[in-house]
Length: 242
Image 1: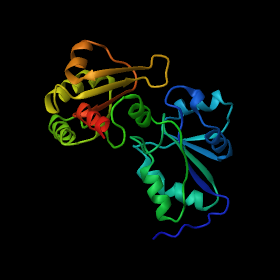
Image 2: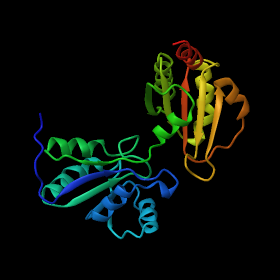
Image 3: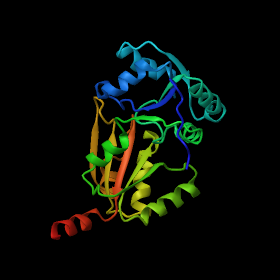
């Protein structure tokens, strides 16, 4: 068991940020960003928009999938030396299909307990808004792009007996809906969540085949999440009987 050590005044905070509507930023998250010496950002330009909105003037450093391996050891040393670091991703909660895991794992291994500041997540938003069974769900993040690995991932999802959540690029949404109908079943219950919490927020619900037909030729834009359950109707009927 890793011993959690006192790092004096230094700390590492993992801070969730809005996925669209800036008013979703929590008070605790704001205070943590104000208290930090440095904010680690997946994209400093996007994070600067958030900080400017709340009139927070702090030094920003980039921390993303292309530099996290190289930067993590030094960041741990800086916390041990008393520096206060806050990690944010472009939107939502770090580690949920975003950088953060490597830093948290290294911190815990070094005896540093990260401060987790919860908030908005496209994952929980989409599960809640899907109108599909939410007592159990599996998160698959972004599926592989290469056809072989992608098909294998869809076949694994087809074996699930629970709601599944997939993040997808708007450029592949139409393809994904067709793949769900083919690999999992035309009658699979699907909720397509687009631009959650933003001005053009939209949730489309129906079977995979219905959504393929209704959305054919659509030029999708913005963040998209697909929630599905291959036997949702049967599960809901069982719940009613119980």
